[in-house]
Length: 316
Image (tube, rainbow, N blue to C red; front, top):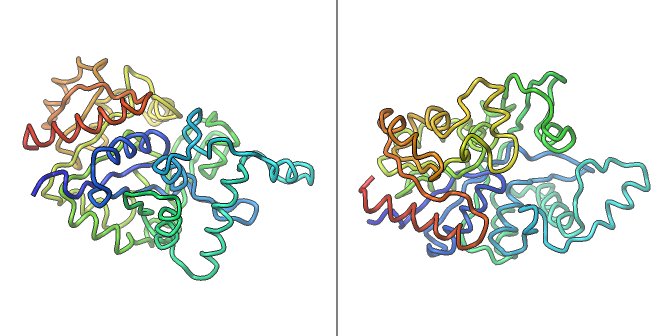
């Protein structure tokens, strides 16, 4: 059996979606399962919003706004213009097409459907080939303890533009949550597990907080690879570097490896960080340097191919 047969990718947000798209271009749809962070989900204007799930759906269906990496290309904002006119909250700006996604999701949840079932239905309607799985059908919410008090993720990330200083992160509801049967089966049958270049603390840790998921990955007898979200001391996008500094974590690929240490066998860092090859290898983790900045579709595909080839050639 090849490592390419059943690839499971853990992601959240734009960076992870880029690698998902690269892998989707080189693997058959049935060979790729993407487990998506849902601790960013929240209720807004009476609707259930799943930002990371939507980003993956739009990216893999070719609908994503190429400038932002999230939202729908060419979307209009007539609904939000009316919300503003009525004096409603506009800090979380939903496009009209994006609003349609949330309307359908919310209606189906109220009918008793699970988030996994709904994500499957919406993904199929958009022509998404790979399987997208919410990390859990149970509600888990990221809460950040900051110098401005406790903030939900979207309040911190969107409303406050990730300016508050973060002291601690917790995932409300994680102790009582369970991975869906589909998530458990995907991890148990995986031939390769990949940690996408997403924020380790805000995108990947929520997934790992679900009882049973960390344990399954730790006990997996298949290659487990992480791709760096840090290049030359900087995050490609978002608050990763700022957050690492505030939490006392080394802002480097080495800091990321130390965070994942017992869960990964291999690590891909950027060519700009070749000086960290030896320190990472000293931790007992195999490492390779590649171009990890995914600015074009070719970049995404090239990184996906490099990852898969490295796993097979080095027999990780």
